[in-house]
Image (cartoon, rainbow, N blue to C red; front, top):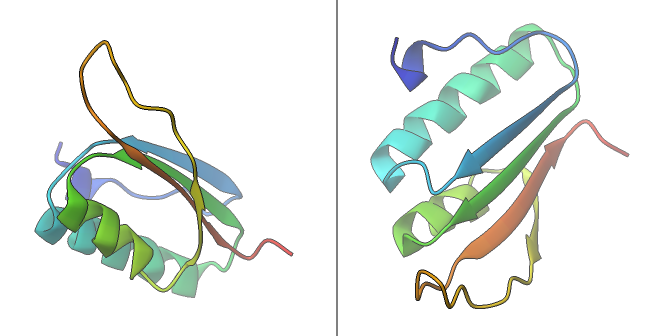
Length: 91
């Protein structure tokens, strides 16, 4: 099964993405998520941690309400990552 084939549950959900894909695939996944929300409007939270700048930007420009969370530099892996919380249907 590929990520694009995953059927999102039609109940309140939390999705966690840890540096998953490059921007083109993230955009496809986000499109499928949005289609799912049209069919069954439910609340959704996406927690995202990533280091690929194009993927971070794709998440920020997804149309979901987005909040960036500060992360400390990962000295074990010598990487700087971005953390985002995206939400839909949460008041």
